[in-house]
Image (cartoon, rainbow, N blue to C red; front, side, top):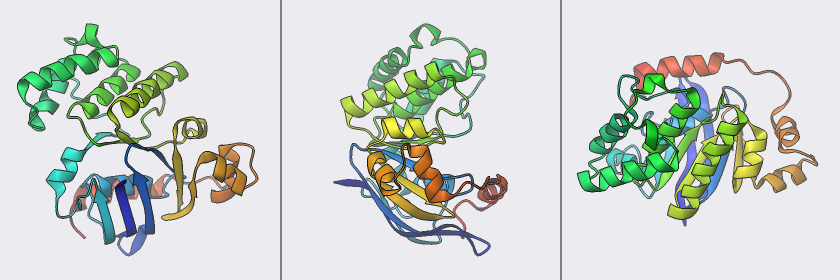
Length: 263
């Protein structure tokens, strides 16, 4: 059963295609990696999945719902860990989770039990009443994961969730995510620049470049198809070795701020 379905998806900014006619599916309970160079269209795609951007054309179904017509149902279906920090530093760990649970109308008794459960899972139960501004980057990431899982989502989107973290913290974060995937059947859709992370954690991978899907399959298939010893080698063969500029991402972010839900 597919929990994400994408057909002929296009997103243009001033007639420039950031996402250019892509189609793929993600199965329920799958851990799916979405890889690409800077400016390839990864974040733009995730923003369309999570109701932050409206597609120019094409179709998206998230848990059976169309983000353009059933945005509330889609938002109830997913949790998200943004690329940039999104916690309130002036609130405690508990207060950040409590506020999220209230926004998602999680009943108080269930909400409180879930908060305590997740704080233990991410090993922050002893810091529940500390202000988030006192937390390290790794602690904040762990709290963001707990927040994203609070309302029992069907899907969790992770946009470069381990960027800048040390190997130990990265390993712990993936341990939490993998555990929730296995225990609760949550579908995991993530982007990363750590090829080893994608190779080790994902069930399947799609590689996007210049707005188009250039390859899809398991890590082993991508390596075999490109006669590569590592996923990084396969990635470079599929996308080239030229350094990509951040300019496309910067323009994308500025336009997103001013054009959410507008063509």
